[in-house]
Amino acid sequence: MSYHPISGVKLEECEYRDGARDGRCTFFDERGDRSERGTYAAGVRTGQWWYWSLPSPQGRVYELGLTAGAPEAAVARRRLVEGFFGELGAEPKEAAALTEAVLSYVDKGGERRQVCGPHLCVGPGRIAAEPIFVDLGATAEQAQRDRKLLAQHEARARVRAGEEARAVRAAEAKLAAERRRVERERRRAEREEAYEDYEEEPAQECCRYCSTGKPCGNTCIARNKTCHKGPGCACSAD
Image 1 (spheres, one colour):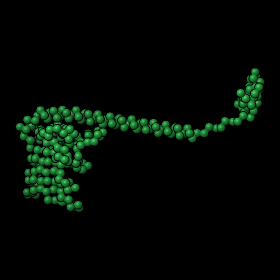
Image 2: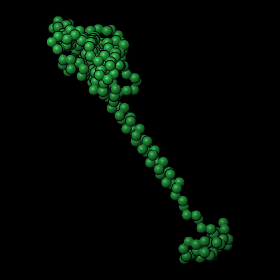
Image 3: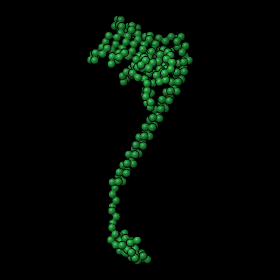
Image 4: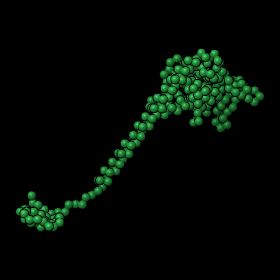
């Protein structure tokens, strides 16, 4: 057994031989909860393993279910699971198909069927309620038995991955449009504020009202005459 040097939480409970893990082994997370269980042979993982969480660069992932309206999370989740199966030895297409088998079960339920590729067998589960089962020793017979099913999952994975990518692009476009709208509103508000702050010069008061003639500068002249003066303070009485 080994324990965390500070928290004292148990990290692993494994059998050893000649300084290497050999036999049954259980790993625990930082909370002390079981995270992985399987078998080692001379320091190498082998046979059947169960995963109650998945490792990621940001820490362990305890939940594969998604909330509605999270397209980026769907893409990241698929990439995480595919990468995990790839690290266990699956080829890219095999990893994509096995990932689809797991995610289809997580999202839709249905038959919990073990699916085998050339390198791995996977039994889908719902982390963390149900562990994901992985058999690192897939046989040629198992791979041949599930060849058609694996191809179906791989084709479905391409479709769903495309849908998820399009959803991300649509969300990004919607966000960009909303940002443009907010920017337009901000500029409009600034223009209105600047207009409200602008004070026009008060109109000059009339110094004389022309009731029988017409205004001309600061005086009145006959209506049939031509005014040769600029604007003044004379106003029409009409």
